[in-house]
Image (cartoon, rainbow, N blue to C red; front, side):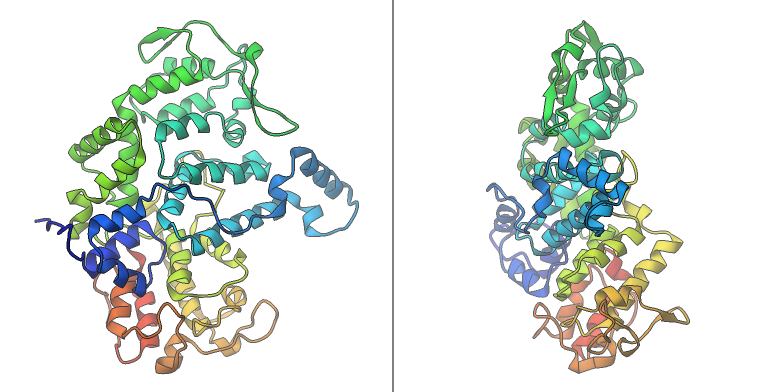
Length: 484
């Protein structure tokens, strides 16, 4: 039986940990304790804060550069002209690296973690990537679009995405004209963004493609542009309705269809609740979304107060994504990592690269995160974090992640070199024992509390509670740490 939540009473540490594991990145023991002392409704009010939010991490200077400047850099690189730096020779790759690092940095410091989680959610729902777009500032602007609407209105976001330059390039909308409609955006709009498979026909895809013709971008500014001369204004039949529909009219028809809300709820369920959506609850929550005219906050509040979300059986029921595992571990341990490239590489090894989803369907998530290869890699990466530092000294993380191994095991810190070639300072958490210099987020917390904060369920192995450093190390390496 699912326990009732006492709305006007402290929510307790178990529910606080569950909520924060699903809505934040690596909640610390202090954050869990502070949340546990609050009532559930007050915590949801804070998570769903309606105030606008922008990223606070400084952005690279080139995000304001126009396409012409990018083309100049590309040509200079091809010809070998000017300063032969990475910025000139490989402008797109370097910008992509900097933008990935920027987002990871923002995830680590954001005071609105649910906003960042929902920004990831929209990035995986409305996918775009470097390999196709090739103009990196456009992907930064798309990321800002998702963040601005992270907890806002889905209908507003959907219409903005249909005009987003990065999306127009990624799904070939820029090449869709009246005489030759491109079906890529129309197909993904129906299959992935709204109705889902089995709720439309090929004729609906063709009609949608015609409706969105004429949407393109200005090559000088990379801004959205509508070319009326290239738009098919003729009569169309779409989902049984007849009219001279343009793109916005098609979106209105889709938003009126009950399956659009259900598709979105199903994806949010897999993101926040469990791997198998409850069909009856999906319909109920979809009704909440439609009743709220696609405002996301009422839906998320209903989701986080649903019996399924509160059911203890659904705790530790989801597998941490690479972003969860790497960013969350760095954050909960309070690790200062000035250079984020290595964190992105670790995520990449597990199959998740920011701004580079595998295809238009995005990352499947769930059990797809775990394979024979990735399970070993995830454990190895956590082991290297444990072995490479005392937590408070992490400047050598980059070298540690690439460091050599002996017999498949990560070498001890004295055998490993940092990015500048100097030995990594400190001893491993396990080796340091009671002397481990834990990060500020973990200091002063007794071992049982540390383990309870780190693990969403009881550990599968034995954990020594004599020393904080040993307890943290063993908790990180316990299989239960892979769950949330």
